[in-house]
Image 1 (cartoon, rainbow, N blue to C red):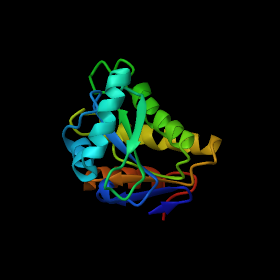
Image 2: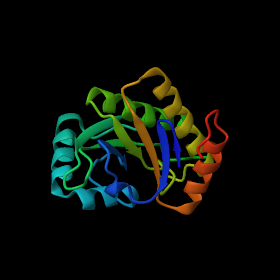
Image 3: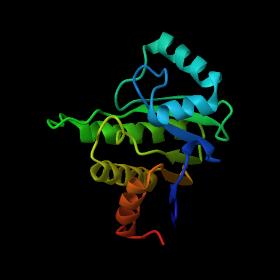
Length: 180
């Protein structure tokens, strides 16, 4: 599915041939489960080594912030690690923190000359952010950023599971320029 600068695929983000992939990291930057673990395994030791250097310098990565490393042995050039919020019923700013994770990843991408970028479904796994709400935040934040910054040529939402893929497909089909 394509929509100008936005594409949707159902697949494995570690295989994407883009300038940068986004990692839904934890604040330790040392890998974990889900997409974080898959990226660390696929990219190899070089990613962990750079994450350790970042931790030693700044103490990890805060929720809503982003840092960049090599992609190691994956086809991408960079991994941009961002920490999404853990969902709670009180929410306490979770929507804004999730939007910040997308926005700060895109800002870091522009600062590093990234033209093509792939995002996973941030915070919808073990962080339990409601999938539909997370997708709405992701799409609107990315669209707003692209409208203001022409440097990024393509954003791909990469859904690992069919449920997220259908949510994104439905939401994107209702946009002013729906995906075919």
